[in-house]
Image (cartoon, rainbow, N blue to C red):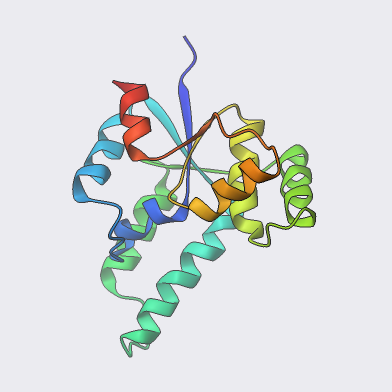
Length: 156
């Protein structure tokens, strides 16, 4: 039996770095950690830029001149590969992400995450209703796009 793959959107990694996301509960994070031994949790490498951008923005808002210790520890945990696997998009993923951008979805990093989920035959765990709306409107596949409730149902 092939291992289920799930591409994570950045919202699900921010709490690991100490940034609260109201739609992502501690229970959700515990569930992801619990399933990480049975499911491949994937995060596209270009999205590390988005992740760090959000951490730096939060640090600036707090008047800090360096990253908080919690963010550094969280980043170490993410990059260690023990919980989440950092993946490199292939040519197909970049091509699909580019097509999406040319068709009107201007968040290229979200496009990459979605495209990786398609090329890897993986679920895409996201909270981004704007992206999902774009995908539906432009007739892209959405059968693999899930929220936390749907992922729990699939994996139970």
